[in-house]
Length: 144
Image: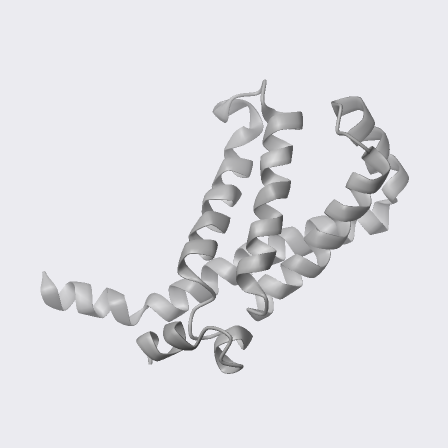
């Protein structure tokens, strides 16, 4: 079992890379679509859902999804972006998905939140701008 664990441990930097990039693409795409489709329509939905300060909230969400998604893809500011995106997911679960349950639509949001918590806890991985700039030096050294 030890050799299998060692083999899987060798994949750790790439597992973190794949998680970061795929989650980042999802958020980048959602942020971009908010700008493309118009923030006014999203603000209307936020209002209907009871999101506080929907005008400010939609701008915050769209910007954080767009820039934070890119940050995750590149692995720069990774833990901060993952934390901000995680807060957005909590808001989505509380204001939009709370009454839907796991099978009614909350499953994707819960999965994204779980991935973000993993990114916060694990960091960006060795294959990231954060590691290349020594912003996560202990992590970069542990994966080398």
